[in-house]
Length: 425
Image (cartoon, rainbow, N blue to C red; front, side, top):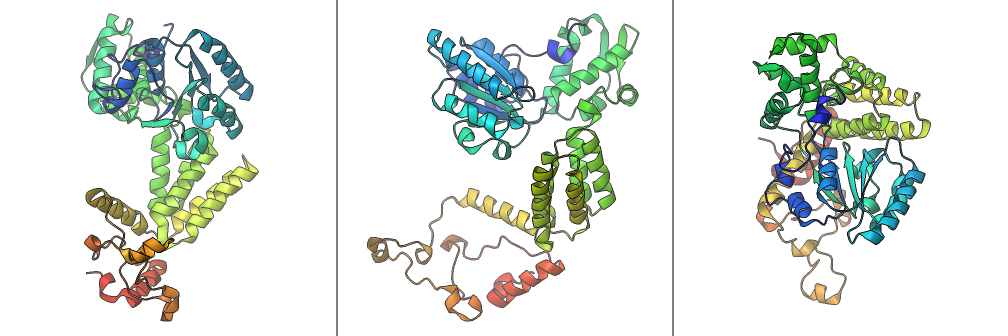
């Protein structure tokens, strides 16, 4: 076959595009933009195989404007500048800005992103970036502020089933075979919401069968994948499954498992910054106030990796992973901010009590701003009881201590300060 099944099945229009209806469905924001023929710069963020590159190619087919593509893996600053120069030249023939699509933009260095900034600001190019990583970490703030951010979701079961049916009935090669989808559980499970992975697995299973008729079952899929472990996942590593196992091992206080899954990521060529970021997140989310030093150590490991590089960077990462796994656990801060955000969404912008407001002008002072505020340091123990929440939430509680030895000290201090308010039932 000249092309893989996933490439042969790549949609050429929005009508064939599967999933992401919150972005490309009727009346959705990207659909309106594409149909209007004029788009502004944006970044597509989502897991692999959910249609980021496909969406960019559909836009290229739909709009009558020059379209340039760069891969952040293989392109340098010179390549960026060359494309910008070409875009300037082609702008003469088109009213709309040429489009520059950068796949895996999270792999662009700061200098590469800086070289883009001026062209995006001046409208020389309209930027479409695609990334599997959080742009807040990977894209420089000036560039991110000039782009809309659209989040793509893992494909749902219905989307994946639609792809399977389309592949076995419409693909030029598979339609020659008699393919029966007797069971699809293993196909869907191994694909993990990744359309490209799903089609790769389907193609592998079908090609491994010599008969014209192929009955797809869970047993057949599992058998073929065990025989060809590299065929269904980039570099043989199930990226999102492995990182999930890694984080859950830390959360579950198993340092051996944490080191094993880290070794799997390292051996699979995972970006060390990706591992380091997950350690920082785990230190905050899972260890939290039970051992505040965990966040300091995770941050230090991140800095060490950035300074000393690879392969020595594996040592501070391993040190942090073991420390986090063996630390006591608390998610009280994580749960607290979740409860507070939920309250804000329900109650909206409640007014700040007058005594807590800033009063930089005489008019504000006359209106009562800051009037009655008690400065904590003027009182014994650096504490005085007063209201800090809006009137409507005066009795609300968001942080609930989880009573590890370290957190118990914080809880006891709150009991000394606030008494009954902090007593847990």
